[in-house]
Image 1 (cartoon, rainbow, N blue to C red):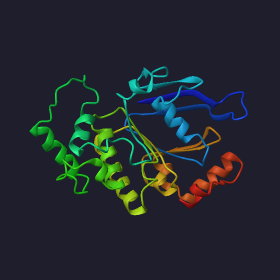
Image 2: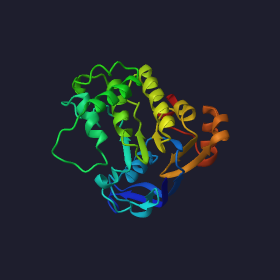
Image 3: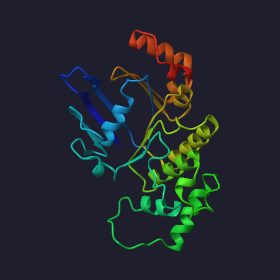
Image 4: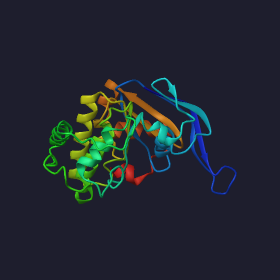
Length: 264
């Protein structure tokens, strides 16, 4: 479903602020795979995700989704294939619009836009059913403004909106990092449930090693713009945080010095 072949990215080349972010990265995700991505600050995680989303062009290499080469596509054109949830709960929704209006817009993602407002009774019932599955009490608040929701409620709604039109690829950019531990665990549980139920191909960045090990069927660790570790299925299930750190030190030839990753 996702095929990344030998992509590289350098910001501000030839300048004093030059930053090599990705170095010859290749990655293949089969349909339905749920891959977690970890690594210290500057490892290349966000650059990889932004490259896939089309936030900026890569210097070389190709990116394909469902056998469609999207390397030169602008970000808005890729949006029909990609659902994305950001770290900031304020992104991904329209705060001044009602929950129902946000869901209605998200449901039309791959449809030709028109000037009519076609929110029907069946749409409302469908939205209520979806919201009820989140167990956050939002099913009876369809007319509430999204800006009045808590961070956790808003992030769960954003997740629902990002997956409403069944994207070919779901990108989760540290989507629980800004939440308190209890709320983060709840949103992560909702995430796992939606991904499994809809069999979505998913790439999730996280700083939490335990979450990375607990979620999905595959884990990759990045360092210095490269993928150092790639484990899946049975091998991943057997890993502990200590095992992962030892694997990193062996692959990178150095200790992992990012406190935010270690403390997670």
